Image (tube, rainbow, N blue to C red; front, side, top):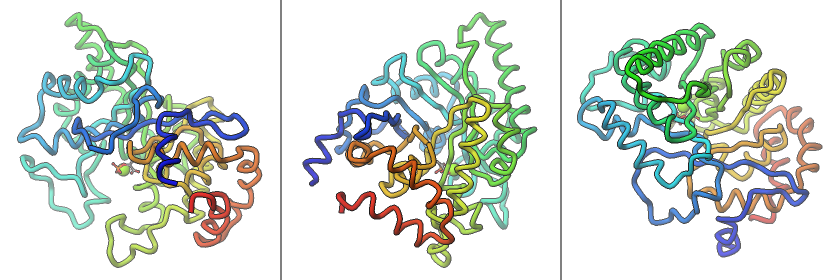
Length: 328
Ligand code: PEP
Ligand code: MG
């Protein structure tokens, strides 16, 4: 079975009835792992570049030049036409910097993290945006903001981005004038305001790790309520469905880049909801390709209503289990 899965590593992610699914990689740094055996040209690109790891490994905030150097290094195996989504710094809560003292808060997960930190530290945000924009002259780069909660935050981040673009124009530094900008869907307010957000952005990327913890009010790292933290909770699936519908209504792209995208049962659920773009760690690619190549898309579409009607995570998981039996 393992051999069969590994054989799929470099094959296309296409269902038995011919529906193509786009797979992307989640990347955190430039380190190579021994089990990295996926040919980069057999995925669509990078769905999530978690830039905070670069900041966490550094001993001070990395300069524009240093960032540019590291991004180039990380992305050197990707071609110009592969899509690369760079997420701006998502620091705070579980992700801390040794050289920067964060405010001490009772609930850091509900505090200054993600884009909120970037607004508080605009100079650091601008340096990163400059590096990302410069890179957009070399690769097919897209920008993504983490932990977006309110509509105004998209405007605020975009107006800082506009200032940085102006600066670069004045300095005659080239960048992609039409760079796409998207947001992570991690906070339930984005689901509830999905249609309004859809009109402001180029793409949504669903961060199911945080979205699950915030929809269910269950800490993703908790030892006491770990059982409650469950992405198969129908409330999470319905949230994803709402985002997908809003994206479709306004012709925007939507992908999933949380752990769900690399979990076979969750992938069955996501495909049935209509998600066709999945971003995951490299080690999940062979397994997910093997799964997709054994699925019948039309059957999954029929599963959707039944899935969304489930009242609890167990019912969801039982429904999904049948579809991946052959993998057990
Ligand atoms: C997520 O929240 O699902 C996500 C992809 O972001 P991170 O895991 O880095 O918080
Ligand atoms: Mg997150």
